[in-house]
Image 1 (cartoon, rainbow, N blue to C red):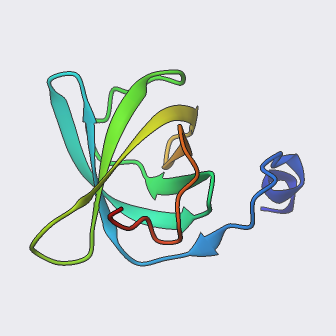
Image 2 (cartoon, rainbow, N blue to C red; image 1 turned 90 degrees about the horizontal axis):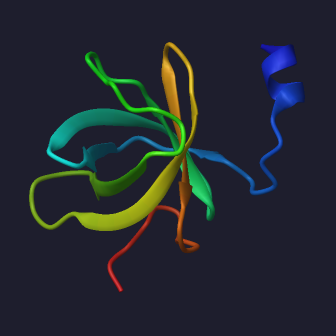
Length: 99
């Protein structure tokens, strides 16, 4: 774990946060649990069957309950066996909120 933390190059403070996100990329979609959030991006647990690649552009729909979701455009910055890292196209609040 220490090696992972030491290799991180993100400059924004990351905050653990309990919510879900729907990841839309082309005609594909997955629901995932959020790992952490920052103003510049987020980390999510990688859902089963996820075929995304670094560099793909996705639309993220953040939600905590039923009702309206918050849509954010992002680039997939990193992928591991268990996690996905997203870089937002525009700075967001923590958690992302409607304008």
